[in-house]
Image (cartoon, rainbow, N blue to C red; front, side, top):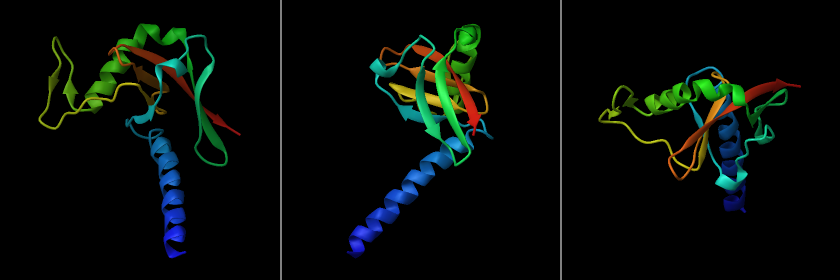
Length: 132
């Protein structure tokens, strides 16, 4: 019984932590990673991801063609947050890592999400914060 109670507490705290990490990207330049299959990605403007942050706010992520002009800028910002320097060539610091592929990287503060597919291509999506 104690193990079951402990397991429920851990699961509850873990799920709350997920929303708080995502909400933290609203005030910082951090990215929140969400694993997604390529078949879940669309380019028709439909919502591809929704997450409730708290009782009064949630986010939606959808494709917005108007972001295409700035797509490379946002991809560079994502890589820079992982410790890479973008210039004529990409250089990594000693502590650099790579963003995960098949993952939607969300930045509420920037209002965008970058999806890196398994073929190392990327696409940029609009992120909207909706208040109930």
